Length: 218
Image 1 (cartoon, rainbow, N blue to C red):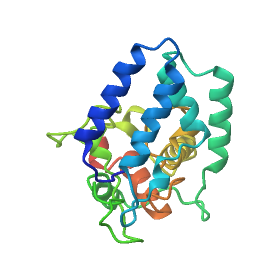
Image 2: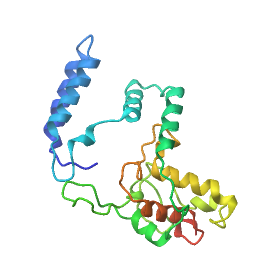
Image 3: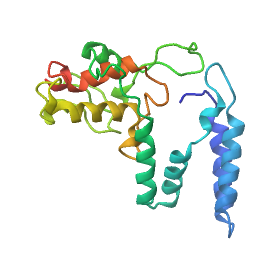
């Protein structure tokens, strides 16, 4: 999510709320409310970037609450979130999970899209390099997520169309479509579920990760 704002005064006000809250006996709920008010007041609709992006669904709210408390999310709740998320995964109607890995590489390296000045319906990138290593040739990549280098090779995929590779291919599709299906509090964007990427783009990313000819597996 990208919505432009001037964060300096916002952070100053938020910091004041935190200091004031620490001096209060019962400050947690008030601090949360004040912080939410600051955030709400600092954003406005601009272009395709709407304030509804600030609204958390049940799974995000539960994971945020766990982060604030410093305690792991309840295992039963996590299992329910994962089960519900798995139901949202849209599997390819034609049964074809693999696209063009060359197109997938372009998507992975493309960080554009979903900002206030992008046009409605514009094609988004995956921005995968921002969190993952994709190939050996990359000289700059994020480490927020695990390295994806040798993703298919490590998992023993020599023929992505073989019955042996079916489980890995389907998992990879589901993970890209809605990562919360496998990790309730995953920080990975829910590319398919959130409409960030199209079904065809997901297909190409699966090929990038699985195809033995892809630079990911070289």
